[in-house]
Structures are given as C-alpha cells and as structure tokens.
Length: 227
Image (cartoon, rainbow, N blue to C red; front, side, top):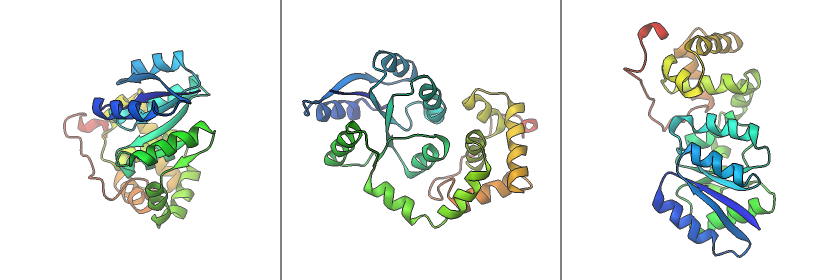
C-alpha cells in the first residue's frame, strides 16, 4: 500500500486528488494538509509516504521548509505540483532530490501515471516539463554556474535575481541580513560579478530564473541600507 499526503493550497484541487488516488486499491491518502505545520505532523505519522507538494503551499518559503523536512525524514518522497515552470527550476536547482515533477495543468491520466511511477520507486518528469528543460538553450552554461555555487548560494542568487531585497531573503530563509550579504559577496566573487545587476543578467541568461516570470521588486520590505 502506497500512502500519499496531499499538500496543496487549493481545497478543490486536493479533493480532486483524493478522489483520483482512492480509485486505486493499492493507494491510500494518509492526510490532506494546507500548511507547513500540518505537513510536518502528517509526515511524522507517515514517514514513508509520498507527498504531493504544491509549489506555493508555503509561499516563497516552500523550498526552504521542504529542505528541512527532507533532512529530518530521509525516506519521504515528493511529487512537485508546480504552478509554473519557474517553480520547477527553483526546486531543481535548490534541492538534492525531487522524485517527480508535474504541472498544475496536468490531465487526470498524467497525475495517476505520476503517482503510479513514484509508487514503483521510479522518477517521474511530466512530458511538458521535460520538453521545457530540453528546450532551454542555456542548460550547459547553467550547469557551469551551478557547479561553482553551494545550494544556499544558488537559492540566494535566484532570489536576488527575482528582485528580492536582502531583508526579505533573510526572513524567507530564516537567517540574518548579514548572512545574506555574506552569501551575496561569495556569489559575486565565485562568478566574477560586480553586483546584483550583473547577477540578475546572468541568472536570466542561464535560465536560473524564467524569462516569462515578472521580476518582483520589493519596495517596502527593507531599508535601503540592507542592500
């Protein structure tokens, strides 16, 4: 019996997932959760489950929360239910292990196929996701950039390139602004960049952030002195 934990923010979507999963006699929905605290509790009760994780379950902090869960529960699997391609890129770049990638626009048959594939211990990548990654002309250069940075530095670099201010990044990653700036200067040094503008250009050129996603500029979350 394969257990699933449904962790998506939409109640309608979660009900639909439960209905589909329960059609298979070898599957069981162990829990349905809508926030990080419920998710941790559910995994504590079912540490070998497969979590169907909405990429925006905890907003911009979803990746960091899942990273901590993976450290504590090494056997839990994740099927990413991604709202957009940028979410796929973010999870791919910032986590060592993601068992499945599926877009929120997926058909019912694709969703069931993903669940069945993961239940057999195999990796699942939706056709649309695989096509998107294959079409990315900057994949080789992206790999070169990623090889120079740590996981945390990649995470900080992506957030900077998305227009996040230092104070916002610090809050999302639960670290100090000073630590964020330390990471910034390490990134600049390793990639031989002069500042945030060059980093943003490089991130766009190498596909670390999606060109189709509007860059976010945080106006009021931090003082200018934090930058």
